[in-house]
Every structure is written in structure tokens, then in C-alpha cells.
Length: 149
Image (tube, rainbow, N blue to C red; front, side):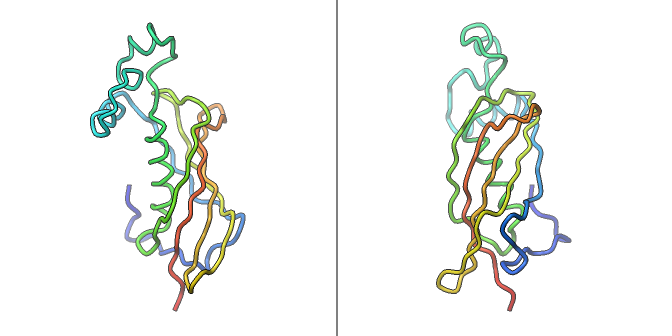
């Protein structure tokens, strides 16, 4: 989901350590997971075949892809920094399973703010919590924000 035209550009000077990013909420459904499997050529049946996931793998449902959750965290950052910001790096780790039907809240907080070679760089901790408050995925994102002239 792209940032709306009426949302103001976030500038380097607007950001402070400890500041929270606006939360986005995701509700991955069966069709999204199937389409993501097709788009990424990930054919593991735990992501799209409910009877297989439940009866053979003994999972509570089909799994939300780890790299889909990373994409959600990338969206969290890029929605907030666009149109003038640039995501430079996103390093993520999956911590626990997320299951189709879970409510996934993508959250973040500014960890570091620095200037390098005239550029305004920000490091943010980002994570996903399920509806039980359990963290499923963590990431550290580095991005550049425009400076005010």
C-alpha cells in the first residue's frame, strides 16, 4: 500500500531515536499465500495445502512465508519514508511460525540516527507481533531520509 499523496514527507530532521513507526496490520489469507507461493516459486506445501500442512506436517494451519513477513516489514518502512526516502538494507530473522488467519502487526522504532557523507541515515528495529503478542519476525532496517533544505 503506497503512501497517500496527502501524507507529508518524513525528513531526517523530523526523526529522533526512540520514535515509533506507524503500525501496519496484515491478515494473510489462503489466496494471498497461494499467490505468493506461485510468484516466488516456493512449492513447499506447508504454505498452500491445508490438508497437507495439518495432517502430514501436524501444523495448526498453513504457514505464512518468512520472506513474506520480511516483505511486510519492508513495506512498513517504505510506506513511511516515501516518496523521498530510500531503503538501503533490511536484515530479518524469523523467530516463530505465523499461521494463515493470524493478525500480524508490523511495528518499528528508531534505533539510531547518523549523518554520513552528507546523507541522513536512520537505523530502525522492526518486528511483527501476532494477535497473542508473540514476536514472529524481527529486522533491522537502514534507510536514508531527505534533509530539509
